Image (cartoon, rainbow, N blue to C red; front, top):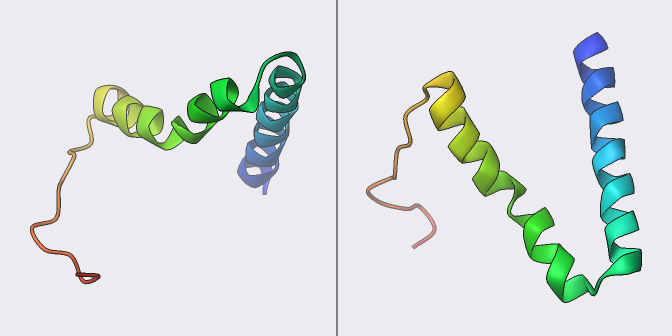
Length: 62
């Protein structure tokens, strides 16, 4: 429960700063950075946690 609560608090902080940035800059400038969070998470997991990046050979959605 502590991990979940901490995660939510950190996410609320991220949203707060995102909204602050939207008030000072255009959305077309800020949004790509916010949407790139998944990519940065992937890179950090690779370097910090040592996880492998696997690319699936086939997709079920094709």
